[in-house]
Length: 79
Image 1 (cartoon, rainbow, N blue to C red):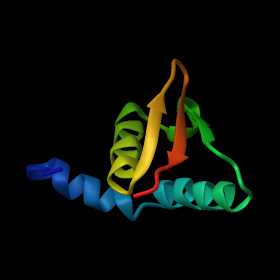
Image 2 (cartoon, rainbow, N blue to C red):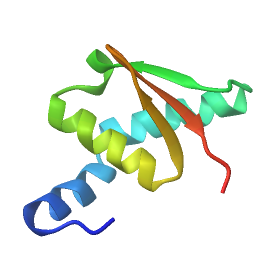
Image 3 (cartoon, one colour):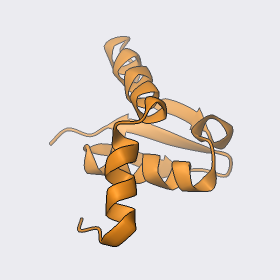
Image 4 (cartoon, rainbow, N blue to C red):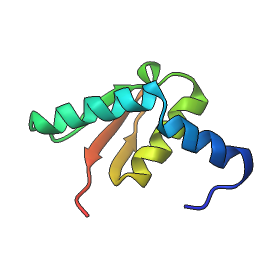
């Protein structure tokens, strides 16, 4: 995925943010515990912009993300 302008800078910065690191830590622990998927409510993801960044970055990192009504379901995708 090619990003342009301010969005590229913001997305890259968000990848290093405490919120993204927390999401990745939860996913790592969930996978280590043998869970087939991890559920996050939109409330846990923060603002709409943060949720979009999280979903975009998870997809870029190889996770499968299904979007529900009030949550996202994240699965480790084997590549």
